Length: 509
Length: 90
Image (cartoon, rainbow over all chains, first blue to last red; front, side, top):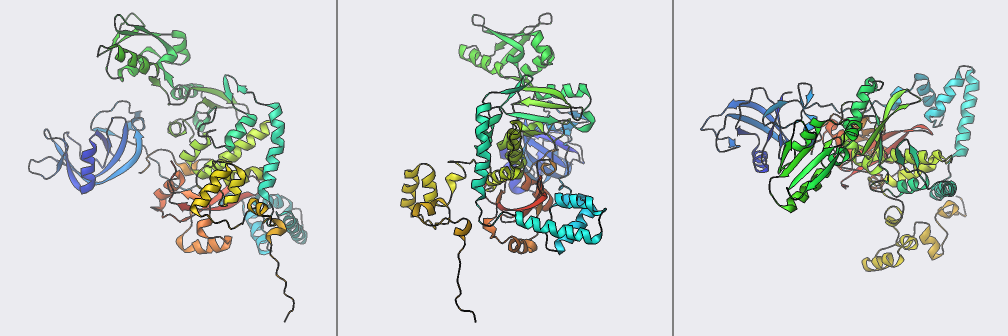
């Protein structure tokens, strides 16, 4: 689909949006056949998409909305205006190449994917497994897939009658292993995670490193997961490459280069000369080659900065930078800006390390720092497998269900790395509780415990006076349905047999 | 706000299957699990998975039930339901 990009003002776009479909006169010759236009306000992020149905030559007397007062050349018939999640310029393609610089009215392509649902997992099961599940269902036994798969393996060596007997015994066993109604599963989960957790305190509290990278492990990490911290203490990503690139070292190294956020201060020293109002950037060759940056990358990055004059000598590696406005304040500001000026890379990714995974013999990248949203848009990486250890970020980029899976997997990994075996079901319960409200909620005062519906339960947990005072002011009613509040008032708790009311009918008919 | 990108959230390994429960089946689902609609676990209207589903099915009202089929290490797969809530988390 042919598209163009251009810069415009918010006022113009709002005017079009109000009147659409409408004609819009622009100051460039536009080829007919263009169906889409992407609009930017700042030359970096594209926030609007215009659907265009026709392109005509501009005529003086037309009633089109003008983009400018003079120099109008063509008229676009805009069908509709859509507001977009900001699209960075790097996502557009010209030919096969990435767009680097913005040029008004350039013809570009925006690679798009068709959003499709995942293949249904149930369809991937073998016919035999499906048949066994259906057969058991008829006998009022709800078999899980894993059990049905296990049974399918024995079925061949059995007579039909034996198999039915096996199935009915499995059914009985399943029934007896079920959790009883009103069992206090939360308490059991808390205990089952807490008890091995005490072992962890003794053994850890220091870091274990993967080559030059540190990742928080053990109890501090577990606390971090359960507290749903906004940013973990050591954010890190595991980046997989598309299968076709996984074994090529050259491409892997290029991706590393593309990922690592390198700033000027990482590869060069900045010397400030106050007498001449001059900043000198002295590149360090060793650091440059380590970060795979060359001289022209540095110059390109500097060219994007505003309010400076770059003076570079052909025979000297050093680059001099002069503020256009001569003041000490400005000089200082520029020095500070230079330090954090990104030469290349994804913001937030401090370091990326490529390693060969021993099991699959293919390259996997590990990063220090995390920026899931932008990393997933890189061409070479496998967006379906790449993940981060920042659970809040997963919730924002992939949704609440992905966050639920991430909580479960991260906590299971943290525990099993310590050699602790906790039943997966407890961790699932924690993950489900943390995500049932649609956002990742911490366990504790700010989260699950602090938002219980019962006043007495909240008051019994933490900050008693605040909750009681608030409840008094607002006239909250406590129906005494939970555990803590019933203990407070001295009633049987609503668990186990305490939760069941018995009615005795003395005389039958 | 529409998302434009090369990346499909629904295909990610961490994201389980999300299916929209048709309007006519909603009551059946609710009576099957024996729960009122407003007591179902929530999923935000602004959730990336919901936005992706909207690209396929068109706008989804809040209250729509989403059937989620998770891969579970203990039972193979498990079915979970969430109702779309109008709450938007930042």
